[in-house]
Image 1 (tube, rainbow, N blue to C red):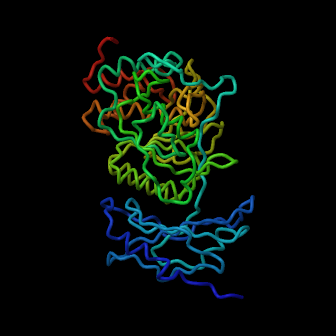
Image 2: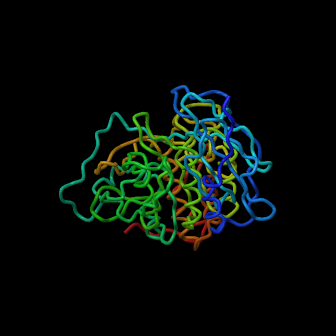
Length: 416
């Protein structure tokens, strides 16, 4: 039987480079130990696990004691400022079980699944895609089809604030930043294998809901059209849909922190993972609001990251405020059925899902954070305070933004 091999110093050169980078303060480690499945992927895909190597008491990262099984290899790695650790993605042969890749770990290290998370928006079969008009006046031509805009009272709210100076990180599939309505969106490259590829529909839809330009004579208007939207790809389009690996999602969360994001939108759902839990908890501790989709299937099982107490889980409602099928992890409901937004191929399309409800909530938080002078906590309290007073719905529904602005002593005026 071939000898198990130890990770080489050459494979860990990224450790030395990473230690010098800025990191989030007061950083407790991911709980150590191995938490891996003994079952191989059903589709025969190569097994992928994450090894998390935190700093020791001397401030250094060491791989001593890390032994990989024959055939396992490090395929990519980086330093995580949020986890204060080096994250290495280890891949095995097709058909191997994740638990079979790791022979032993350093005492303070962890090995977790490189879980896959799914986007949560579906095209509307009853509505045809819309093309951008050849010529258009200054008003946004599809504004009248944005029923959520009216439900949230956004025209009135935009007389007060539009999300100015607030940074919103969008962790999703790649956004088409060349779209006529998304030219103010910034693409922040995520240097992981799982975040490459062409612009995709899901990320482009979500970006339009949050930050589409208003009053440019093209298409639609965003909930927070003046916000600084940072599109961070964490998913790769495939024939099976968007594949969003945890390694890339963690990289996106680090980038969001590095880019000083105040609101993070993660319209994805998947399994619990202690590395993901630690990362979102760190962001919450650091004052960042995290919003996530709650899922599109009726289920009593929790969906993550929405189920973590540090994340706002959002479910979709239709124009009659009826709740769409969703998971159990719901803190708030928001418009998410028959929503028109920007399409990856250009033009506009209709879609439904909790991803779109999460995007409306993230946009609302950006607008309120702008109104509060950058105080994310005050914005969050105003958002939930208005939602709880807006009716007897359980869970509470996202209320008209003027109700929340009033809680920040920013009453709306008349719509011009």
